[in-house]
Image 1 (tube, rainbow, N blue to C red):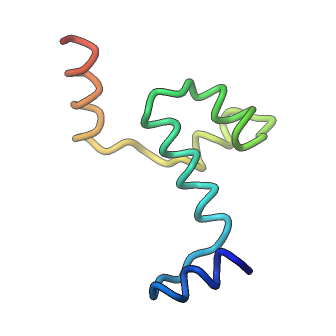
Image 2 (cartoon, rainbow, N blue to C red):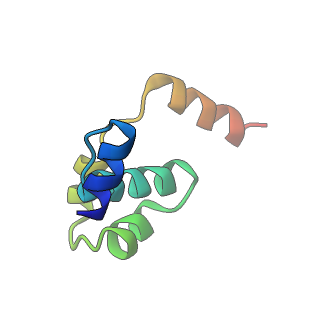
Image 3 (tube, rainbow, N blue to C red):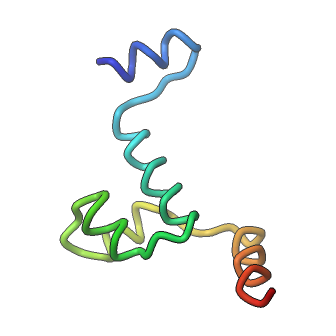
Length: 71
């Protein structure tokens, strides 16, 4: 209820599950190992569930990570 109410105040339809997904995606994109995101943050027993949950990385994001690894 708190999340929905806060979203309503700023004109955004948001649910607690949206924040869970955002936190997991943010951690993953910040370099947290997928296994940690899966088992600790999301508490999934299966890594494949987390991979579907986080979705695909865009081509631009992939290129940025490659640049970071090689610089």
